[in-house]
Structures are given as structure tokens and as C-alpha cells.
Image (cartoon, rainbow, N blue to C red; front, side):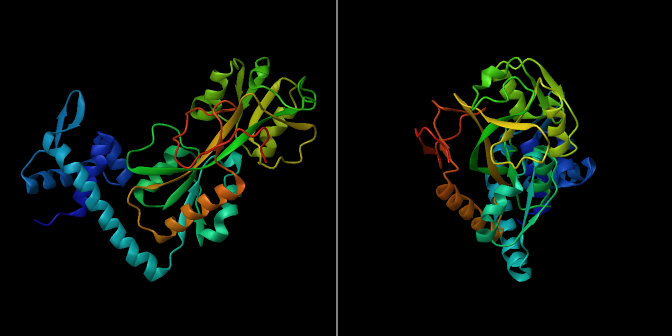
Length: 321
């Protein structure tokens, strides 16, 4: 029995989404075409793979049994194609980023020399980059991952970056050498967009009792921080190593007890076979060791989601480089 990879891919994507419309969208085909591929696969296998009803879509027992080896089959097929196309054409690794206001490229720039050729994309947010990865438009992506991450993707934590509060010179806390996050409760958190779409800022505000929140438009870092500097009650959050633009009156104040950490991750499609991915992950791991990117002490630091123990360095040192 010879399997059609397009049919197998249609099945796996639908099994992951449990929604025919969403699966069709990520594959770039019509829902009718997706349904036909799955129907042909079911006919070939002589088994129904999905149950469709008023309560939604779910896998049948046969579908549950077929899913793990189907994923392995796709991964092997993708690796076989990548081994030929990447080696034959010397195609560089296509890496997309999101969270542009936080300058993700400055971190990638520190590993680019060791990782080999990289071509960057122009993702807007995690959902848009997820779709690009699943379609195969990009090979890997870099930014902050938050749940739920699509089942067809793999991610590796690369960097935990301390976060500072940025205020204008007239803010009552502007001259403090450092601040506990809860001391910002009387201030207004200024966000570069709808807060319900900005997971880190939303969770920070909830965790530390920041009730006053306002939303602007992301027209770039200088414009965003210019609006912060113009209002003595506003503050923004930025990873500590993001270079501040030349906006008069800005102050960057470290946050302590606890220090919020912004988690940067590398993400790729499970089973991706591009040879450059191995080099990029190795370069990230090497730089993390050199620059102590993955130090984390739960008694001193705060993360929205506690990280897995893998690749972390437990540190109780009083200062961070």
C-alpha cells in the first residue's frame, strides 16, 4: 500500500487542529480539498479516521492508532526532501522573528556568525509565525512562546532576559536605583497594542496588581517610549538589553524582588530536517553558557510560566551581568 503524503499531511494537520477549516487554512488549501484528501485516505485504509458530529471533530480509535506513525512518516519525508534541497541548493536557514518592539534580532545577531547563513522573515506575532512554520514558509522562528503552542511545533528555551521599567523623568519613581514590581501599582502600564494579545504584559499586570492600563499603537520603539516620557504616570516594560532610543527624559529602572524575566525561545516544525537548524540550536546553547542567558532562581526571579529544568542554570548570585 503506497501512501500519498498530501493525504497523510491533511490527516495529521486535522488531527492536531480537530477543525477542518483551521487545518485547511494552515495547509493553504480549501476545506473541500482537505476533506477529499482525508476521504481518499480513509478509503485506502478501509477505516474511518474521524468522527464528525454536532459536538465537533474527534479521532476514531483507528485515527488514534494511525496518528503516531503518520507523524513519523511525515517527518521522514520532510527530512528526505530537506537533505536534497538544502544540500543541493545551499539554501540558508529561514528564520522568522516576532516581538519586534523588543528587538529579537539583537539576540540572533550574537549567534549568527556561528550558526551559518540565516535569512530573516517579517512575522507579526506568535500565531502568524506558527502558520508560516506549519506551511513551510520558514524553517525556524525566534521570540517569546506562550501556551498553547501548536502540537506540530517544537521549542527550545534560549534566553531569560531581565526586564526593566521605563519611565519619564517626571515620573515619581524615576530616580530610584531599582524597584520592586508592586511599587508600580499607582502607575499606568502603557502597552503597544491590545493587552489581551500581549501575553507577558497582561500576566505581569495581573501578577503585580497593576490595575491601570492603557494601550497605544506600535509605531516603533521611539514613538512608543516618547508617549511614556510625555506622561508622568505611565511606565513601560522592556528587556534590559534593548537599546533605548534617544528620547529626552527617559529613565530605565531595574526591577527586583522579584526580577521579571522575558523568555526567548527558538521554535521549529517538529521533524524539520534543515541542516542549519542543528547549527543554530548549538550556537544558541553555546552563547547561553558563555553569557549566562539561562540563569534562573525562583526565589529571586519571576516568569509567567515556570520553565522546565532542562538547560537552566540555577543561580543564587546577587547580581546579574
